[in-house]
Image (tube, rainbow, N blue to C red):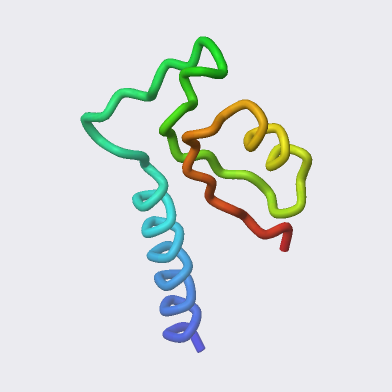
Length: 72
């Protein structure tokens, strides 16, 4: 029983470590500075499927690359 508990603890710690490392962001790349809505032209924009944001982006940002996210 002790061995199973150690394995379970190790597995949980490994998964947490993997999640933290994968969410660390991109190295060497500075975040984009957005000062106006025109700065979003040609950028990748994530929105929720079926939201009002989609209509707003279509209206004001013609060159946007839209990535849809599900509300799961």
